[in-house]
Structure formats: C-alpha cells, structure tokens
Image 1 (spheres, rainbow, N blue to C red):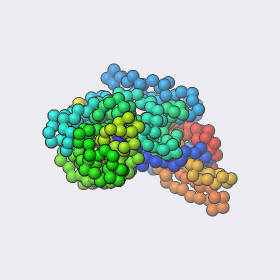
Image 2: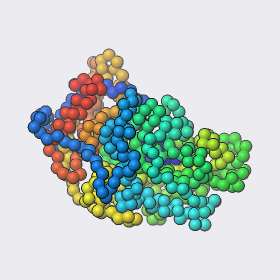
Image 3: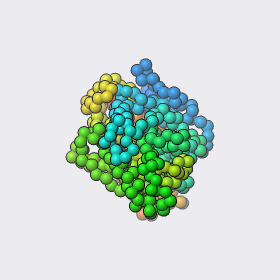
Image 4: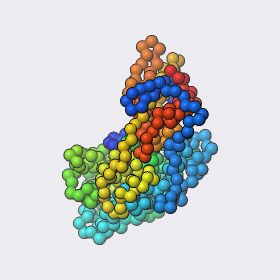
Length: 461
C-alpha cells in the first residue's frame, strides 16, 4: 500500500525519505538571525515600511490549468484547536497536477495506468489471475479520517506518524491524507478486487530540492481469485508465510512490478530487498539500476490478513504497492527541483507533451540568497532537547516564505558546557526559479520568520 511510501520511501531522494520524526512536542527555542547574499555574509538590517512586500507562494488558477473541485482553502483552514494547516498548504489542495495530461506528474500517472490496462489483455503479464481489470480512482477527497489513514492500516494510536509534526490535521479526527492508502479500506469494502488510486498527499517534511509538503502517490491493490487461494484456509500466520499460496502472491506481485519498471524505464536491472510494514506481510522494496546507481522506487507486500479483516474481505488474499510520482518524474524527466512541478511558468510547461518523456531543459538559474538562524532548543530549567521537532521549524519557514525556500541545512549544533542548553544553527537558502531575489526582500521574510518563531515561545539568543 502507499503507506509503504510513508515508511520506506523517506529514505531516498524525492519522496523516498524517512517517514518518522520525533514525537511531537511544543517547539521551544531561542534563535539568532544573520544574513548573507551569495556567499558573503553581512548584518541584517530590518526593512523599512516603504520596501515592497514579498508574496512567496502566490498560486492561482488559469484557463489552461483550472483548479479542481477540492480547491477550497477555507475548507481546510477551519477554526479547530487541532488544525495545523497553513494557508500555503491550503492553497495547494485541488491543483490536480496528476490530472493534467501534459504535466510530468500527469504523464507518469497515465503511463502507469496504461501499463496496468495492458495486463487485462496480456497472458504473460502475471503469474496467475490474468485478465485482471484495475478500476481507476484519481479524484478522491483529500480529507480522510484518522481511521482510514491509520487504524485501518494497523498504525497504532501512539505511532509518531500520527503526530502533528508529521501530519496536517483539519480537526482531531480528520486530516489531509498522508498517503493514498487511506482509501484502500473503503474501496475494498465496496467490493473492488483490483484498483489503482492516485492523488495528492500532504506531509510535513524537511526542505530541500527533493522534498515538498505536497506530492503525489499511486496505490495499487489486487486480490487473488478465491480458487487460487483455497489452500490457505485455516493456516496459522507462520504456516501462511510458508504456504504455496503466499509464495504465489509474492511471485505475481514481483512479476507485475518488474514489468512496470520495464514499461517506464525500458529493460533495467532490478533487485528486491525484504522490508517491514505493519500492513503487509511479507513486505519488500524494489530497486532499479539506473544512471549507474541503485535507486529505491517503491514499496510493496502481501496485504496483512488483519487489514483484509478490517475491510470485510477476510475471505480473500492479495497484494498492494505504493510509489511516489514525483520521485519517478524527477528521474525520468531529469527535473532538478521538486518545486518546479508546482510552477505555472510556461517556460516549464511548454516543454512537455502528453504521453512523452522529454528531458527538462533548465530555463534559468538565479543565484541564491543565504540567511542563517540559530537558536537554543531548550532552556536552563527543563534542558529537554527532545522537545525540539525539526518539522515544526521547517513548516514554520515554509508557511512564511513559501516556495522561495530552496533548502534548509543544519550547519552547527552544540551544548553549552555550563548551562546544558543545546543550540542549533540552520542555513536557509532562498532561490526563485523565475527571477533574481534581493537581499532586502529576503531580509523582510527572514524577520517574519524570526517573529513567527517568537510566537512559539522562543527567546532570541
């Protein structure tokens, strides 16, 4: 299931990266502000009122790319005490990049669906249950319940992935889906035996060229025929894992996904690694050898029996996989910065054509502006450094400066030998993909970040 991406895919670039963060706590820090342009540092001067303000994340509809039916920011910015969705995130919902036929995300989605459609008429595409027809779901509501997103997938109540430091909550029980697996149980309960589910997902994360708080995933599920699984009735967990029926599902899963990689990349070397996910057993990750290196491209496994029980399908067995579309698109189109997928700049969009894999040609490379910010992560009384959650700080920066933030790096950390207080210094790299930035406008954003951080109870160092 696509939740596999939430656990395994955070380990590599793109949407392959660590899923878990520290347990959520109130951000308590002190910080120091310095500024620089290019590689020369200078003292920041506070901007005057006459200086023009910067709108870092202006997103709008256009006749060519109209917004989808879920593009209603007020729907996500509800006055609930547990709501942690920022205006920046709310403005991204409903952009429907995966439904744009000439957008790289839409092209990848289409090619994956094209491959699975071909399996319904192929006699050699899978080990068993040929002629499977996969139902397509690509316009699901991005708001789901905690039960859909976590409980139905055996994610325990105290799992760090549920924390507000990882997940965007609308209310205490509703949230922006963190994976398209959140729709798995509803489709299985409805009686669908094979389907592909694609959509935008949301997750608080680090900030660099391969991570973004909104991205796209593809979930695939297939239940085997009851006739092929008749020998699995009444088996214990250990017996099931050793059974010919479980091995048949594993073989069918691997053959199907190896075929998908050949469809996308051409014939390529592959290797399988065992993994662990709470919702599949056994579980695997697939790597391909591309551009002289091994790259993890997806996670998958045999659907856990308890997940099927919760979906009222205890009489069936099957497999599931999940993959990140940005990950594949960045590789295939050679797109260097994940923020480009969200631009409305025609210099980007006119390079791509429906159904074609075309290498991206950079149209600009403007210089970065660097700003440093340093702060204590605890105080002299509590001295609890574990209270600091990086994702809280990253989300604060992203919500303030939007897509002008290219990367945030930890460049220094230390613990004061006398007070026991811990300090971190981060370098924020600002870069526009469309124009030159001035030190003055970035100073204004940096001061806003300082002020916003202070509202979290931070003390300037």
